[in-house]
Image (cartoon, rainbow, N blue to C red; front, side, top):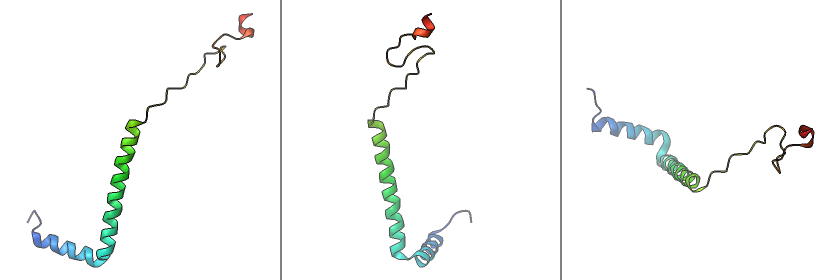
Length: 75
């Protein structure tokens, strides 16, 4: 009673085929396979792409280019 027999699964398969048709089920499974393939490719691309270095935020009174203190702060 707790598990499904082979006859239950055959009836479920028959209902799915009646509702969607053979072509539609194959399209859904093909799209599912393409999604998994693109996901794996995206994960591989992310592993090979080097991480960008973090942005440097200049301290107050420093210029972003030279790193020296500004003239007004030296007075």
